Picture (spheres, rainbow, N blue to C red):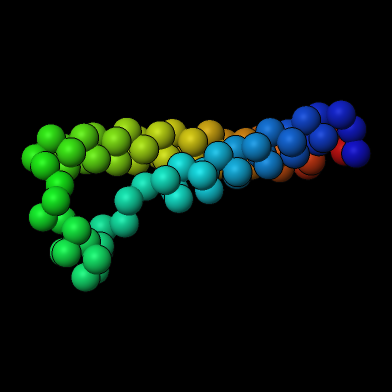
Length: 83
């Protein structure tokens, strides 16, 4: 293994952890019974803010996933052509 393999491996591991964190921060679509009971306490502005945060997190999830897959392809190209 050369230094490029180690660098790409570390970067891929970092992006994998970032993807996991961003996905876990997103609010689920189905709140169930607890969301029904507690949903009456939310104000209109709080619901709008939550939707805005979810939209930003969804957008970042797409970008990070694209970068992750490009890194995976780059790692395979480096492994095939430079070994």
